[in-house]
Image (tube, helix red, strand yellow):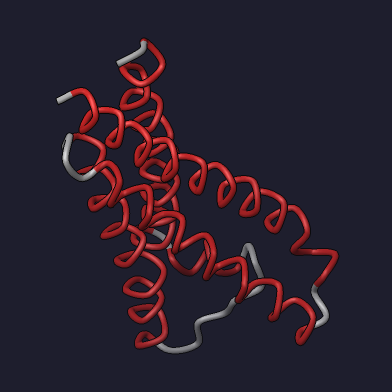
Length: 142
């Protein structure tokens, strides 16, 4: 196996580190201060139940994603799972964002996030192919 394929697990782990941190940062904003985090993007919570829903929907789910990607990052066998998981999340988020921004008329406001999510999606698709290629080379070597 060449040096490139031996280096690939570290490259893909580095790739998984970014969404692990991003998911944790999103979660921390909405877990600890959902009212101000929501207000920064124009959301308002006029009932305590709404604040709790924001903590769960915008805090707990990204935290769970962060914990999952972290567990994939530290496991040799689950790197591919983590890469595919993030690629699926990015693809779904991008589809929903693009359709939503046209329906809602928020194209200008969302273009920065569309670019970032598109780059992440491409990187994670590349990561999936790298990890699959590494595994294929590893099987051929045995």
